[in-house]
Length: 328
Image 1 (cartoon, rainbow, N blue to C red):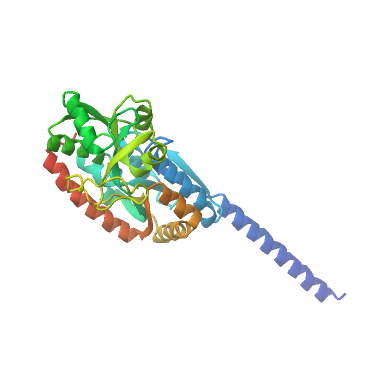
Image 2: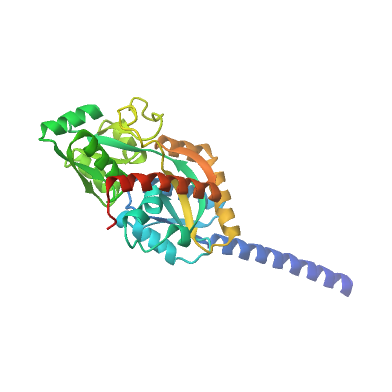
């Protein structure tokens, strides 16, 4: 073999080895990425369950990245929102939130420690849902009007669990109390999981939360959903009337679920996360699991999520002001 041929072969082998090592290094760097999904409620609730479904599915779509759910319960998602604000805007930290933390908290807390319009950027939305009113298994009421009659039989007084103070569920309790002339007190919990535990133990007679919070226990008769918000009955519980049907209009606008990132996150990172989420939602295994929880599943771009958030905020600004609530 000539010296020149030997040199060429050596160079080719070296180039091939270098390519393999470079590919291995890139794959290792890619797989070493860790994406955090912040959740403002404790494990066991509806929002946490949704986050874990998406986290598992997103791993492959993000190139084998490690995707973890990081629970930061407290103050109705306020702590998680503050953690998002403090996170590096590198596309590796997102906040999975529904309407409460983004649309409601800034209206009901004087100093929430964050401003969604200035500190966050919408990444993508993935679902809408409705809130619902449910009674515990030990309550004799089979429907909402029967619950109202039951409360009147208790001297007109009652407590209704809500997953967070100064939340949409709490304002619904206030509106119900005023309409039906009842002395109802909203009992705030640190998330839906502890509220549900008390409902299952018949420690509280009723609660308001999202459909995902109630769906499994409703199916098994452990609690009974007796009314839903929104403009139409829900496919997962078609026998349950809307509040508009029950004579309580004004709650037709439905809340949303979405991912939010710190302001300053590069557009390429936002687009990558949004595209990965769109692919995940298109998978029947993921779509069907979320739909079975009572979500109306569908991908929204960051721009569409932002529009949805602003419209929902405007509706609840009017409702909250009408109740006379003073920010705490």
